[in-house]
Image: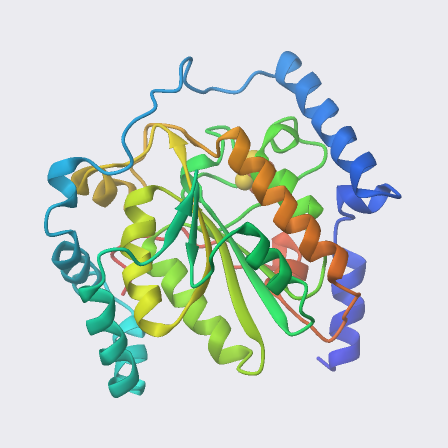
Length: 311
Ligand code: SF4
């Protein structure tokens, strides 16, 4: 299909984002929050009654975590993409891996925010507004509602404005606030999935500076951080609260879609994420040359059910 026709089809099929109905960011956010509060009363979603406030990683799980991570990543690299990424530039990446293994702390943290190659929130904001930046924003499936119309353990999100579930979902709020250009939203199923997508983004847009903003349990952020540090990824991890995975058995089960609990993005972290998205959205001028999955209509995507048995 000629490029122009594809863009026309894409534009016609795209659902209008909630934020585009309003003149200002504040109006849109207040309207979303008010509507979400009303929907919560009319259609309450299943969740825990009290936030259990679990430790991010259990003490015995932290022991030898580096080696557990490497072993897990290598044994479950079914597509071979992570391995190939290392072999493509063995000197650079192996040296990165050695440094990553030797470092006790690969990030600095502030509350639920983990900064990789950044010092603080303001650093990230000031970098996000660069016109050369492409934002990969990823949401762990663990904080999708149980009632999610796209399914929980999938890389899909229909962000349906008529759905009372999507109307209460923080993922829906973020996606409806995102601009259409320079951004790639992802709905993360496994640690390999996000690693592969980050590698893909670097390959597809070699001239862009790729920044990530992803939500995940602390254990996943530690594991992804080691891989990401080795190959030079930069961005922010947002630690989830609620019913998280903080042991290897729970993590491995969740990587197969077995996640009976509900994780959440805590209130302060939600506010920080919205501040980052706002800074980014304010800086983005409409750029029709950026064809990203953000603009791809939900019914055109491959809604794979990811599994760690991919062939
Ligand atoms: S906004 Fe997306 S993730 Fe949230 S409930 Fe709707 S489809 Fe699921």
